[in-house]
Image (cartoon, rainbow, N blue to C red; front, side):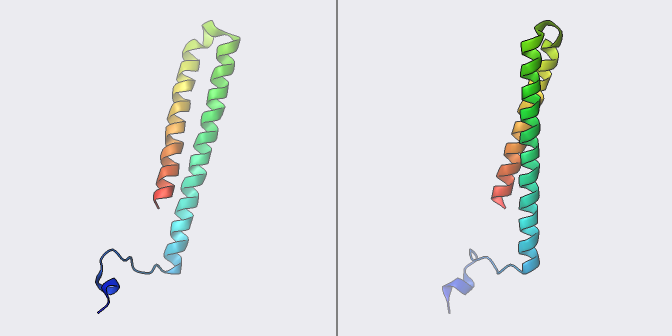
Length: 86
């Protein structure tokens, strides 16, 4: 008897639809990650512009925008990592 047939480490062959669905999920996660990264860059740019123009009025708002930008970057990173694990 072959050891490859009895080994639990060998994954069974995946069908065509399963491979397609996996690729579709990976593409979705990568697109979502790219969108979050883009939104994070836009928010960070807006925060830096508001901070450099009028510090007194928008200091709190720019800090909130930076916090949201960092949160979006975290979501982008986690989405890319999850897409890679598939």
